[in-house]
Image 1 (cartoon, helix red, strand yellow):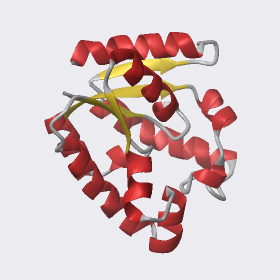
Image 2: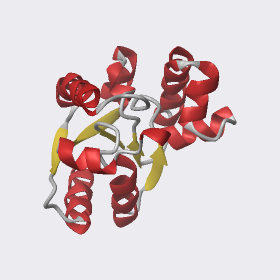
Image 3: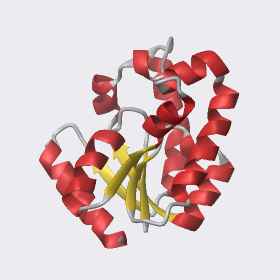
Image 4: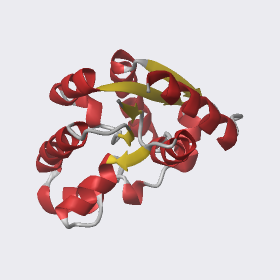
Length: 170
């Protein structure tokens, strides 16, 4: 079984996903890191800079399909925009269970580093808030489970709750 983590950029998908996978004894894959490695560019930012957003999104779908085709249990961290593409949502619906890390915007803004997030580069706080608001309904609609992450939650608590959710699907 593949369990995929979705949520806005800087919601903690990679950080908490890696820790929860270790706790559950699962393979962990990060879609952004897989794309960076397979492209030869070294980062998703470099892919977007050299190839453009349209090519980036097409490559994202290709790598996602490859990862979802693997015959092993894994916890997969998706990119913040992966589920925006209907084709990606359909693949995920057929081959995975999705957990949405519903992270408070204030927490996200504290973690945000636009230098490594191509979608955030050059955007004002208001623009990021609007983008967050636009994406929330998509995350909610495709989620099989929701893990709320608030400012008062400890990292250990988040990992523990996430691991419990992951185990419920495996």
